[in-house]
Amino acid sequence: MSLIQDQKLTDIIVADMMISSEKVAHVQVNNPLEHALLVLVKSGYSAVPVLDTSYKLVGTIGKTAILNQTLGLERFETEKLSDIQVNKIMETDIPVLLKTDTFLEGLNKVINSPFICVADEDGYFDGILTRRAILKHLRRDLYTKE
Ligand code: 4BW
Image (cartoon, rainbow, N blue to C red):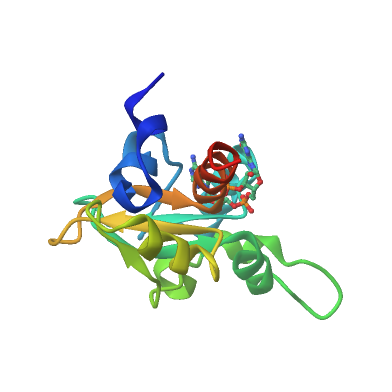
């Protein structure tokens, strides 16, 4: 049995539950939207973090926001995607967690977002906390209380 399975929810911190940065699909702030859409479609995710060239977290970007840019009167004008950079449409007003934040702080934040980015005090990207990870820990806690 792993140590985390013995932990109470109140003892668990974000670092115990997050997907670490090297396993997270991301795009860079200066990428064209064409590249960002490719990453999103290939990875299968609806949205991913946006990082700058020094791997600091700057926002998130999703498929819907990208496709909205291509909406023409009669068709998707996909040729526009190579002329627009990620920084023009990314979401920058995003909640962020620290690795040392508690389970409850994570739970409160994933209520409104399917994932929350985790960064250190200097803004360097550490990973993401997903709704799935929070739900798995809650389920385990409920079962062990039966
Ligand atoms: O490729 C996938 N593998 C697995 N195992 N599950 C997936 C995959 N794609 C989607 N899912 C499932 C997960 O349960 O669908 C949910 C919604 O996916 P999303 O939001 O709308 O693409 C997934 O829920 P989740 O694991 O709680 O993840 C929540 C959100 O976190 C995802 C996506 O935007 C982001 N995300 C998750 N893992 C990621 C990631 N972004 C980048 N890299 C990763 N490794």
